[in-house]
Length: 158
Length: 197
Image (tube, rainbow over all chains, first blue to last red):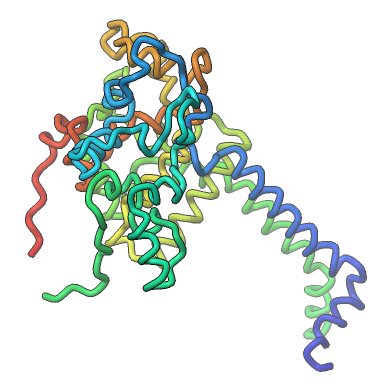
């Protein structure tokens, strides 16, 4: 047991502190990371409860072009915008009425309503998990804008 | 006979050296924190000059006292406390790792935006923008603007948005955000990027 020679020497000198001290450091680090993530949440762009504005309730775009202008413009310029696939088709309605659940990030089931054959093809032909947004990312203007954002090539040809 | 006694002395008082070193480092922390929060330190890395150039053309070039806005005024918490220490150490470690191990010449500004917005404190914004019912010129907000701020204050609906969650591209404007209509005024003031071939 030559490998553990240094360990047993430390053990002889410091006793139980050899185990307690590193364990304390690990525990403190975990506490720090947990508190840090609680204090600075990663996802801050989430409406916990949508506000109530009965006069303008039917017009999502009218308010969101002011409130979230970038997402609104992405949708307006996208294929979904040109075809007038309106907000509620994917995102549902804030009052919870209708079949579609009100959500910031719609489920794959919502995509399947129109693109079922495409999703099935991707699963059958390429063995991909049915998760559209990992390749067609929202908020990087793909579903709302371009159909597929090409990854930036790492090597450039000069 | 002198050598072993020196060695013995050293090994006997080794804890003292660690203690003195630790105290010196501990006493230097406030000085170092203040030093690394200044604009000169941020701009000592030349690739951050882009961000400074954008800031100078933005609506946030000057604060309410007509002084140039410093990096620290937005990017780290205003008062020293647990939050300040946590943010300062996290951002500092991140910067050091990217500076020495990453490729700072080709930064992914989309990812940077996420990290930066996570640590922009609302207190920093509220230090200048005190009244949320009025805009910068003292005029009352539009109807939609009021509704949005009501949601932020929890009066009508609630949201996890901080200030920077909605008010984006106020001080920095990467190229991929220049096509947005909201950023048109800001984009006009910035020089056009030469076309890369």
